[in-house]
Length: 316
Image 1: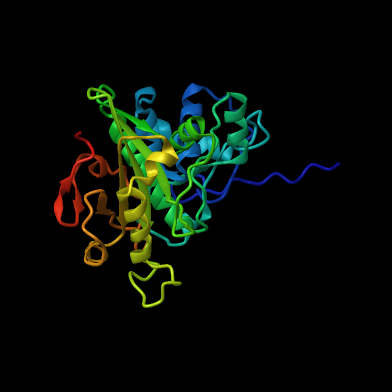
Image 2: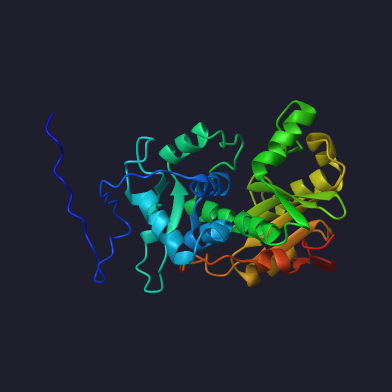
């Protein structure tokens, strides 16, 4: 069989390979433990920008440029021993020509999953796709920022991933936790926990990502609205139903992340004043300006609560 024609590398004005086109150079990639940490990070959260991946493994890199070069090779090169490149670059990030873009968003490829599987580092019950890339990207940036916040103080906090929360519940109860109120199912966009090591206490958090795509309220109870979702959570958490589903007697909170502060305050006017409902917002996702840097303030600063004092998840 004839070999396919060799693709000549395409470069930008500075001599760099074009980021949205995979261009292998026949370089052989031998993965190491740091690569596996990066792949596992993406596997458990979802697609993330370069600064997040560097922050996760910065103790193993000389600088962010070294991380960027390695991620470039894991994306471009196909000679990995696992059938193909270990990283993908989601095409949605190239929808706009942004002059401020100086790094890429990466996701794990099917070959990266294969590499993790061989190392015994794949996880069941990672967060499911919502069908909206923007939504899932914001979710990944949020949960990854919380994990990185916990990792910044390893003597005080331990981050508990979504898949671990689910799998722990299955071990205790024998089944996947069910979110069901009034005969209707609802599923959080993500779950995570924080183990406060000095107090030896755990809090669980459900996450709802609001991209301003649903009405806050409606006269029809059949229409899915933000107000109806909050009513479900109010009953599920307020009535302690989570205790049976997770075999967990600690605190359970709902975190609402939206993309606009005015929208967040409009929601807060419509919902009951429950101390376990937390609000925050992230700038830049409403019109997808550019991939965000790590957001440590999401862990270190307070969240708003209707009718209650602000909540600080970095304190117990």
